[in-house]
Length: 289
Image 1 (tube, one colour):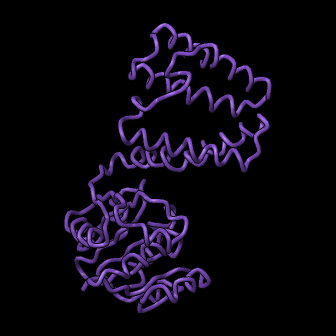
Image 2 (cartoon, rainbow, N blue to C red):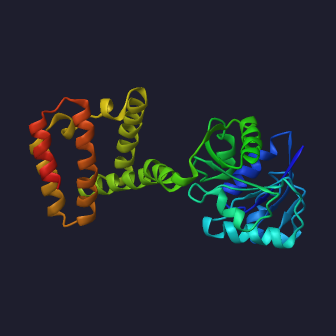
Image 3 (tube, one colour):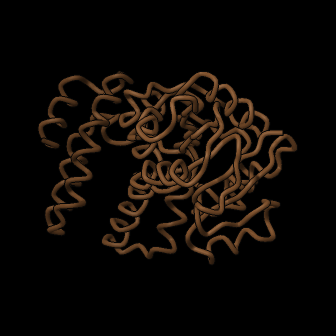
């Protein structure tokens, strides 16, 4: 049985604790966080040996999984090493999508292994995230022995494991931010624009829910370019011009900027789709510049 300590009881750490606690081959040695109130939420949800508010109280473990904010990962790892005798082949891993696991080598013994495991999932609510974790894609990089062990562990709880290039992690992570975090922003911008047009938020939310679900279904049934609809897909210069004038009349540079930036990227999709004329798309690109 593999013993794991989880250091950091935020949304990701708490979710992973609940998930790993269901694996019969895993023993949770401790979950550690300086916030005792955060730890108390997990008392009746997992069977860890210890709920620690100090790294000094961590038991020895095969794997120390650090789930703190990125700017605390290296210092947290260093604190673990300084306060404990670590056995050879102990794994130190983190869940950052940006920081390479090699950064941990600065503070650990050469006999230990490092890895990173980045779950591409929204951990807004730990219990719900744990229930829906199966099928989640998780990116791995690091020492081969550590990566293989972590892949085996997370595969058992339903993860789809794949390798990532540590040198390109910032770009890899930015892809998730664009397609997930900024989707929240895009939905909010749409609701704000509907409100400015006189549509109440309760109604605009339902409108966007319907069209967003339809759009996502169409995208994943084909491709973003093939699923594209709307004025840029049609090469409708007049409509784009009216949209731009409407935003200018509202004196809202932020909304206008978002519209133009996304519009310029959408012209490329329309070109790929091939429904609109090249001349019309060129004129639309000029309007959006």
